Structure formats: C-alpha cells, structure tokens
Amino acid sequence: MTIFYWDYYGPDAEGTARHFLVHLGEYIVRAGVPDCERGVESAGAGHCAVWCKAPDDAREAMLRLRPRRAAPAP
Image (cartoon, rainbow, N blue to C red; front, side, top):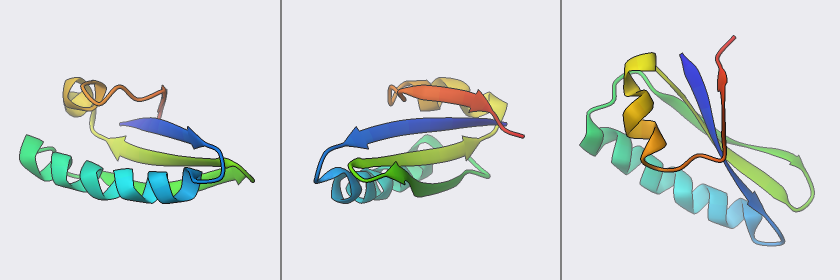
C-alpha cells in the first residue's frame, strides 16, 4: 500500500482540498481502483492535503493525478 498526497495552500486550501476529494472519489470509481481509503488532513493554518491509501497495483492510476508526494503505508 502507498499513501498519495495532494497539498493545497492558502486561505482556500480546505475548500479546494474537499472539492478535489469529491473528484478523486469519482476518478477511483472510473479507474476501477479497489480498496482505496481517502480523506483530508491539515498541518496547520493555510495548508490542507488530500490523501489516498491505495494498493500497490493502483500506483500507475494514482500517478496520473500527479500527487505532490507519496509514502509507503505503515
């Protein structure tokens, strides 16, 4: 499993992240990527990130969305 992150900054970061989360869910369904967990987290004021924990065989599909960072899931 890998966790992919899309970071957003500024006063509209949370709204933008929540909007992207909706489209990420739609993409996951269209791409047929099973067993994905996803959500939104913040590292502080002015930052919000969308994350998606996806199986390793979904890596190519997730990279099409150009995440800013990725890490192995614990």
